[in-house]
Length: 180
Image (cartoon, rainbow, N blue to C red):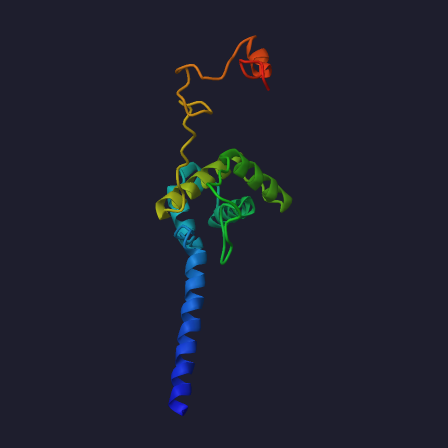
């Protein structure tokens, strides 16, 4: 009797563990592989990628502050995530480069840090190169503009829907035999 209870207990524990693992796997299945942002590695990469005229005027601390402000901006936009954050919607998220520069400059000014616009743009550009190097950045393909909304090529065969001045009257006229 005791052996039977032990076996049933073991089977219950294994069953619960397998169910828990299955739930987590199902939840994380559609998630893309996470690319981990390493702050020190990113700072070293960005500092090495910056032009000499920028590194002559920005300290490591300044570069680090710009990186942090831009990362905060990306996080607010939903592009950068931390820990257990799950994506809010489907599809790629697109952020304009200029918006990031503007946001960094505005946030920097709020804490009395005033880097030049060109320097911020150079740091963000190098940070984007770092993201690309670690595989965290993907190119977004634009929509196929060669086809119209119906899927037919633009300038292709005319649609079956009547067009022109008679279109409205032909749709209202009903069947050809006059019966409705």
